[in-house]
Structures are given as C-alpha cells and as structure tokens.
Image 1: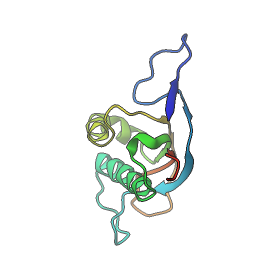
Image 2: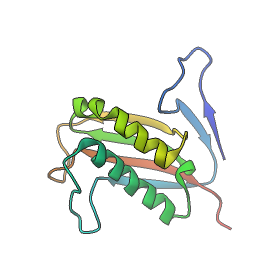
Image 3: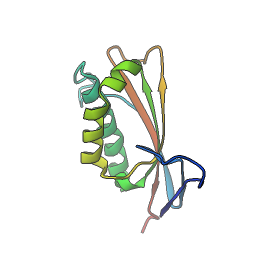
Image 4: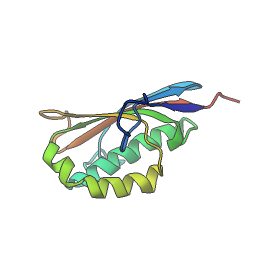
Amino acid sequence: MTKLVTPAHFPKARGYANGIIASGRTLYISGQIAWDKDARIVTTDFATQFLTALDNVIAVVREAGGGTEHLVKLLAFVTDLEGYRAAQRAIGEGWRARMGKHYPAMSLVKVAGLLEPGALVEIEGVAMLPDAK
C-alpha cells in the first residue's frame, strides 16, 4: 500500500520519511490538539501534549477504518521549539509505543500560538486507507 522514497544521495531519514508513494482512499485529518472528550487540554507537559495530539490523530484514522500504518503525512505545529527538543526522548519512546517503526513524511513548524489557550502542539495528517470492501 505504501513505498518509501529516498534519493540515494540523501542522508538517512531519522524519525520521518522523505517521501511515500501511497494508494487507497485518502483521509485528511484536521489539526488535533491535546484535549480530552470534554475539550479540556490534558496537561501543560510538552511530551504528553504531543503524544495526546498524536493519539487524537490516530483515533480519527481508526474511526475511518485504518491503522497507524496508513498515516502517510503528518504536520506538527509547536509553540515551543526548545520544549520540543527537550522532550524528544519521551516523544520518541511514546511514538514507538504507538507507531512502531512507521515514520510517515513529516514536518514540524514553530508557530507563535495556537487557537486553543494552553495548547502547545497541534498535529494534522493525511492517511491512505485500504480500499473499502
């Protein structure tokens, strides 16, 4: 369903894919933040916010009939780049617990702020779901 694309002269991608060829049904996932079912931000901890936002992205994919392996593109917006860097180990451990060794094409952008007060991270994505049966 997917094939990674890395030009031979590129350095090895770590934590993302340079490109992915995918087939199937396309699911576009709106930006997800670290909130619970009552629309409350779950914590002020950066790593926990990142992983909760990722969990919310994964929940949308699963609701559509897919799994983490169907995620082909993620875009993370963070308000604190140093907070991200400081939390990378915890984020990496949480990533592997959720996604295994699957790394979609990814970008991370520092932003001045997010719509919801207290949100430090927002993640949006694209998934290629298997053809409907």
